[in-house]
Image (cartoon, rainbow over all chains, first blue to last red):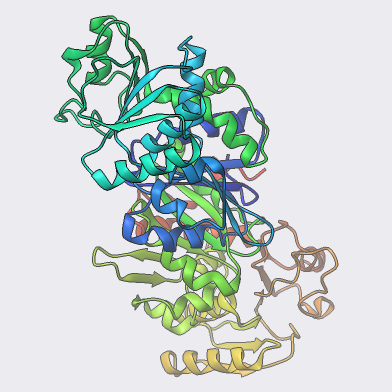
Amino acid sequence: MIRGTTRLIAHLGYPIDPVKAPMIYNPYFEHHRIDAAVVPMGVEARDFAAVLGAVFRLTNIVGALVTMPHKVTTASLLDVCSDEVRTAGSCNAVRRREDGSLVGDMFDGAGFVLGLRRKGFVCEGARCLVVGAGGVGSAIAAALAGAGVKSIALFDLDEAASKGLRRRLADRYPGLEVTFTEPDPAGHDLVVNATPLGMHAEDALPLDASKLAPSTFVGEVVMKQEITPLLRAARGIGCRTQVGTDMLFEQIPLYLKFFGLRDAGPEELRALARLA
Amino acid sequence: MIRGTTRLIAHLGYPIDPVKAPMIYNPYFEHHRIDAAVVPMGVEARDFAAVLGAVFRLTNIVGALVTMPHKVTTASLLDVCSDEVRTAGSCNAVRRREDGSLVGDMFDGAGFVLGLRRKGFVCEGARCLVVGAGGVGSAIAAALAGAGVKSIALFDLDEAASKGLRRRLADRYPGLEVTFTEPDPAGHDLVVNATPLGMHAEDALPLDASKLAPSTFVGEVVMKQEITPLLRAARGIGCRTQVGTDMLFEQIPLYLKFFGLRDAGPEELRALARLA
């Protein structure tokens, strides 16, 4: 229960309605009598910098979870950032140090790769297609590179986003093949939808699912619905898949450590979550 | 339970730890399946204007409850204010209209007077001493004036605060006697502690309790402890009393209406509250 003493974790995004994190963190905090709460705060892009600054003036703030569409902007508002933030060019976790400076990290990519590994996918040497080079796609590409994949083909309607990401990946991982491509899954071991396509019923598929091979692993970032049309098509073909919330559950232990709170494994978090 | 769809009521004050409102509103919202939550946000005076502005940029904000030490400042940050705000010179309730403008009201005084009347105290013609002419004291003085008291004696270490309040009371209630005095309860029908004295164990009494008459009614605004040293002394003498949370419970129905939420009587709110 929220009290005057409760410490806050602001969950900043827009639209904020579909976020799941409050229903995962808060039951966990309640179960362990940790006097903290994740509070969803909807904020549009034009207001983001002012709101982020104000949130970190609160005397009871622990940190912020940042989601769509603010992950890239956040990377530019930090005083100190991790290598992951630098390579991804995006940030989804912010905390304040005693001196008031803001420290950022990015856990989407690590969470995504932890989920792949838990399912037995071998990252080392894999050929990957990442559709969407925004905040989450960049983080996933960076984490895949760090996990030893052979190649990453990028597609984004925004060419500048893809080019920026390729440059940052090349700087840190000179042996990695990074190409620009169409959203064609043929020939890839791993295909990732890192676009918002799948959130709405009328959305097009992010890629040509008819070209998926059964040996291809398909990963999704959309969480609004568990089984998106892309995942349904992929499962129909026989592909192994990873749902959006897998990335979420895998990265929460990293967030808890980052915020200096009692951490837990994804299994415990799943058991306590009230997503329904 | 907090979800992405939950609408927020920011509770702004400093220090924020002692506030009770989250434990009253939130169980009530939960009981009636109202998807809203009161969230305590500690904010120091120097940051208040920026934080208030940012809070009202949030897309899921309903409004704000404002408490110590920001009630007077808030009155100066509104686009539209009620007569109560104008007379009190302070504000404890803020909401945003569709055009983005901020509307404020002040319910401390109304809540305090509703509590007095529920206990059978007759305001009409009463001689009152109000110790503390800050945000809450000003609101109580204004509401007592509106309820028809005969006289209000004011004491505050900050003379400018008392003088400003007297001027505002005189403007709106020309028949009211308003004097400056020492914190001496002799000769008053009602004595109000509207200072923070009583929050901490080492605090002095806000007035000379040995001069209380048994016929005097003693009202308190401090809520950190239910029975403050002043109330204990007053009860020892045989005075009728009103505790700080009475003012709180009586004004919540006014807040709920102001925010456009399902309203309830103080009895229902008390029954559902989890203050322990």
